[in-house]
Length: 449
Image (cartoon, helix red, strand yellow):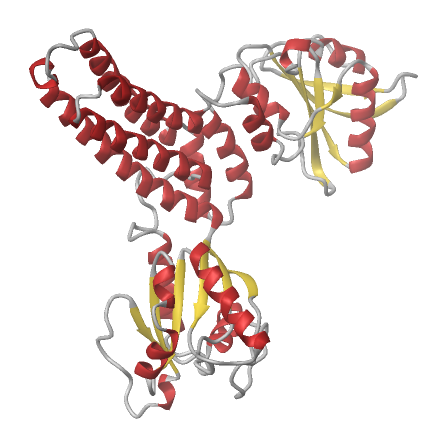
């Protein structure tokens, strides 16, 4: 049973766990105002700040501070909400929390305030997730993208495509009533043009959502290459510390080594792997197997080659780099060459992990890859998640199938595929979302949100 259907009032500490100058409790539900009065607050006027002395059951003062009342539905959750602002002592805040529970509230579950806002129609699901993304943003660009999602930029893009799919479905289902007539005589050209338009909208939405996903989650990059090309040295140079063991012995790295680093605001999950070559003992072969498996999940393969003999390195790794979605070729040890390489191409860079020369260019290239060529402050950029990208891909797949069915005049099957495409998009905003999916999403939120 939904918490909303029981009419329960919830409470949680909504400020940080550490001590601070100001702390806050949030109360939401039908008993919010009653609880505030019992705590010692004066009669609260909506959306006005009131000084109050918060008291326990015996009348002793717990703390003094500010109380604000937001009657539903004009509140964050859509219910009556009271916010109690006092001193930021964790001990005092826990006392206030316990007193609110004594007065009839219960401890909120993680994410329950945002969940109630969603269930009461104050936010859609993508906007609710953007709250968590905004809290977790690691830099200004990620915060701006999350703010745009919270403002509904992403949701409006999804709804635009959804409306296009609905119009197509209505047209196709209307044509079903005239089964004896060929589709071309019933506006088939218009339907096919609409499908092409929807396909283009979905593809652009997928690209933008994937960019937003990388902005939120960071870039998953794998360092691959032959033994002794300098992969571990490059990992250490990017991390700014001696994270990986570096020796002149081939096969020193035998397992994957993960390091999360931040480069000018870009979060990068960097995975160092065993050198790829023919042969090696059983442990080294297992390391190479894990390297190839890691590449299949990676956004980027950073292929590190010894600049003194890159052709030998390319021959050693074979077609392994092609398993990753994208490749960046790094020609390392250029400080050992008589002349620095020139004109290597858009997806190649020359550097020296040992001296640091060329690392700034690598940083810039990684930022460009993470943004898919967009500018640092791209207009309309929004945060997104992997499930959003997958839902868009699913919708695109159903749209392709619908197009194929139309070519064979299978109108009923085409209409069903258009419905499935629309439902897939509905999972993004929560228009067509199962309760168990909601539970998984909101359980990842912090308490008090």
